[in-house]
Image (cartoon, rainbow, N blue to C red; front, side, top):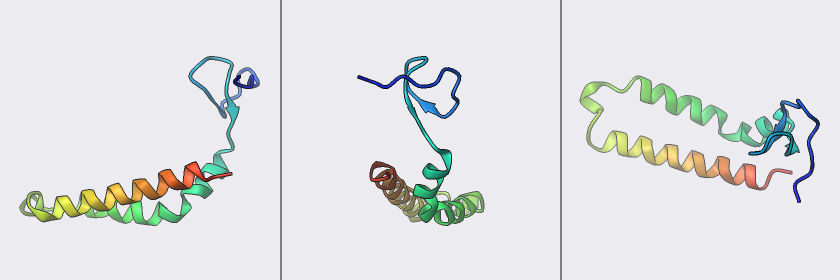
Length: 81
């Protein structure tokens, strides 16, 4: 059974109106803090990618880094208390 959230509580997470679990955005941010700088750096690399480097190994490597960062974030959120 899903606990009932406070009506109008913007920090509740649920697919149904009025139901969910209160979520502290600061706790979620803390769980993702270890990858924040990595994701920012990756975004700079993607944004600065020249058309010459848009094919070949560079995008593949950046995509691999993105996937790894996403895995780390997912693990951090799954194990977050």
